[in-house]
Every structure is written in structure tokens, then in C-alpha cells.
Amino acid sequence: MRWGLGALVLVLVVFGAVPIGILTMATVVVAPAVAEQIRLDPCSANDTDTDTDTAAALSATSGAFGLPKWGTPRYQSLTSPAQQVPARIKALYVAAAGRYRVPWELLAGIGMAETRHGRNNHTSSAGAQGLMQFMPGTFAAYGVDGDSDGRRDIHSDADSIYSAANYLIRSGVRTGQAGVIRALWAYNRSISYRNDVLFYAWSYAGKAGAVVEVGDPSDCFGLGGDIPGFDGSCPPSGSAAEHGLRATALRGLRCIKAAFPAIKYMGGRRSASSSTCSFSDHCTGLAVDFMIPSWNTRDGNAYGWRVAHWVQAHAKALRVKYIIWDVRKWNLSASASWRPYRHPYGSSNPTLAHKNHVHVSFYASGGDSR
Image (tube, rainbow, N blue to C red; front, side, top):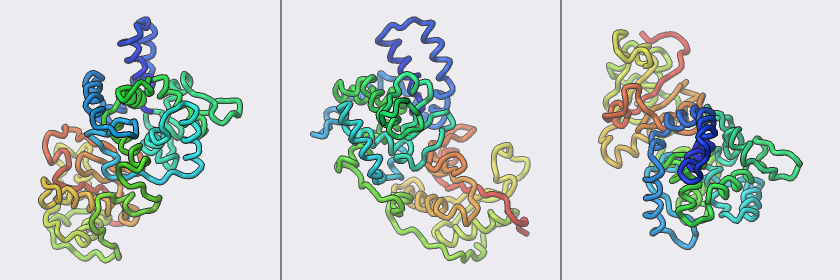
């Protein structure tokens, strides 16, 4: 819940006529979280009027399940299907859902989007904590004692899940499908996040995508198609892009090219006078761009994702620092998930947006290439 309290402030302004002094103080408290959410997901800049209009359109497509269908855009759920819920966590979802009269699948959808049901339970860069990722200020206002131990603990799975259900109720989730939309907007002010949560919820209801077991290869790769093996054989590629690369990047280029021979063009080291040297690993010989054939077709995009996910799967062996592809970035030191990406110069064309090439940066290790 990276927006949480800020969304509550917005709702109170519109509907509750809360005194402006209180609003000003709350806005100052949550501003860093808002900025972080917008940085991670530019869709967060959409306003609630557009969101309400979308709710009406989604309502017309809903089925007996009672939740609105997901819409577009989606991000996380496109490449990471719903994971099987651990039995202990599912019991908490079901119990909290029974107390607050909300679908347990909706709670599971949030838990999957936030931390994969606690599997990636780290404090976010914005300060959100616990299985359901509460900001401390929001938890102080809406947290409940879910396990009846006499205290509210933001890091308790039970307290986190029950508090999420309580927060959804306080945000109007039971006031029809438009209420679900508004409650998810309050939880995290992002349209793509809402669509991911709803897709996951419908998946757990058996009416959308597959639910995979942890360790299932589709959880990593997600888009189908064969994933090449990796036997460590990385012969010279014959590409001029090899010149000037450091040892790790040189080996990475050769290995990735060997695994994906359809890639014909690559970019390696750039001149030290390049305007991008302040933020690019290309200038130090520690990055390679792999140009994706037919990148602007559906098959080309899927091929690019296979390349990106193969590199991700072999990141440790290849000493990969981070990957950028299709306006998404994977950097394990920051998050186990792919996140929205924005180039420092904007993402106004396919190159800046990394839609026509997979960028791979490497850690320095060993000697430089000759």
C-alpha cells in the first residue's frame, strides 16, 4: 500500500470537507510515498474522475463472482501469474474475508501483488511494510489485531491481512463494483496496480489466468515458448560489439548471443564523451544492448521477453546487475519483481523505452577484455 493515507486525504477533500489544516499536514506526511509510486508507475498520475468512468465500463462485463473485471494497463500480472497461496496465509485470507464480508480472493489478489503472499516481504523504498505493505501512518489509523494477541503489529501476517480487509471496508469496497474500484484506488493509487489485483483475484476464483506453484518455470517466464538451456558454452560471437567490453560483459554477450542466435545486432561500449555516461554502464564497458528482431510485432515482443527472462534466470552465473526491456526494469538489489521503467531522457521513442532492445548491465569482475 504505497499510497494509502494520501488517497484517504483525497477522498476526504472531495466528500468529507475535512478542515484544510489537517489535510495540509497529512499531505506533507505522505508526499514521499506519492512521488515514489508515480516514479514506479506513471499510470498513477491518472485522476479519480477517469477511474470512476472506468468503473462503469468494467461493471458491464462482470460475472457472478461479484468483482469488476480487470482492465488495461496491467504490468506485474502480464509476466508473473498468480502464485499458489500457502495454506496458513489462505486461512488468514478466508478468516478475514468472513469477518469483514469481502471476497477472500480480493485479499489474495492484493497479497500477491504486494509481496507474493509474504514471499517477498521487505520494506519498500517508500516505507511500506508487512505482507500487505502498509505505510506506518495508515496502519496506525486502520490497523487491527488480527490474531487476538492484544497488540497491532504491522509485521504480523494476521494483523496485516485483517487490517487490509478493514481498510477496504472503510474505503467503501462493499458499495458495489464502483466501490471496489475506489477502494483499490485508495489502497494504491495506480490503475495498473488495480488491474493486476483484479486479475489475480479472478485467477484465484478460477476465472482468469492459471495459478502456478512456486518454482514452476512459468512463474519466471510466463509468456510461453521454449527457454534455451545454459551449458556455459559461450564462444566468440564475431560481433564488433565485443571490443572494449569488460570480462563479465564480454562473457554475457557471448552467452546470450549463443542462447539466442536470432539476435544479429548488439551494442557494447560507448565513447567516454557520450552524454549518457553519467548514468550508463555502456561507457565503462559493462553493458550490452541486444537488438530484438521484429520487436514491434507480438512475436518479437514475446521473443524479447524470453531473452530478458532467460538472462534473469541466469543472472547469478552471468553476474547481471540489472535488465531493462519493454519499459520495465529488473534489479534484484531493489526488488525481485519487474517494475515500470522511465529513461532519464524520457521514454518517448522505442530506444529510450527499451522496446527494441534488451539492455543488460553487468557487475565488474575479473580483468578487462582485450
